[in-house]
Length: 164
Image (cartoon, rainbow, N blue to C red; front, side):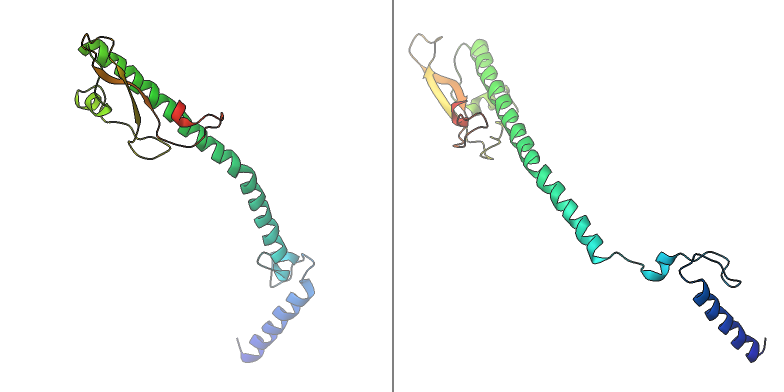
């Protein structure tokens, strides 16, 4: 091809683009229809981005309180289960040994539980032990009769966790 041919071809391409732009038509140099949207913009507009962000914020505002309730309910369920299991192990220890345990650590060291569980509300092993008279003892010994949470928070039912 000569320089004149290349120049003529470039003019045809430019003219074909101008003539078919926005109409979805084809030109001899562009056999695929050209979409009007491709000539206008190739990204998102600020309005589109703001609408999407607003929808995400609304969905987050709706789901966050439900998520927090679910987390609270799960922690309360863990606390209930831990207290029930420890109370059952205290009774089992007393039935097996004929006396009440002195502490939760004794339950752990005697193999009744692997380790003292963590209170889900305080994040520590700081249970409040309730001591009382051992009904199996003839000499009036005391031992661990119950366990309560050391948390000062109030449950979703309105009662303090320390009374459970």
